[in-house]
Image (cartoon, rainbow, N blue to C red; front, side):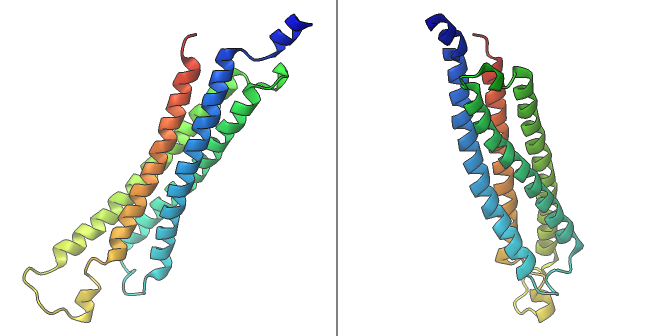
Length: 193
């Protein structure tokens, strides 16, 4: 009876991997969620806080679109980080049939890598477009100009413009956290005993 229960209980290595999945999954989940919510809040404030004359630049629109697509990919990364915690719970199940196979676990980790890589690419493209617009704004200001007409004031870089760059950097950081978590877990399960 004792031997039978020992074969049914997970090994110490499997318990360590399960613990790694739970802890890393939760850390990744919360980092991505908090940083992603901040980035989304900034982008929403930018999108709905602009007036008609301020939002006429097409480069800003495509930058915001790419940033929003990057945040959608971040949503997938957040879901997969949560899924890592569930995998950790299943790995220590007393019923071996409930435990996910290694190949399934590796596929989920690879999916997490893809979500975060694609999201990081989209967010970086958005950041490049927005920074390009800000550079053009900075270059269009005449040197030594003292008084500005209302039309020229709309061409100045506003604090909200810099916040949009910050939102993109936050989103890239969140994707980076997801990448690190997925890579670390992938390395952990492929580590020899």
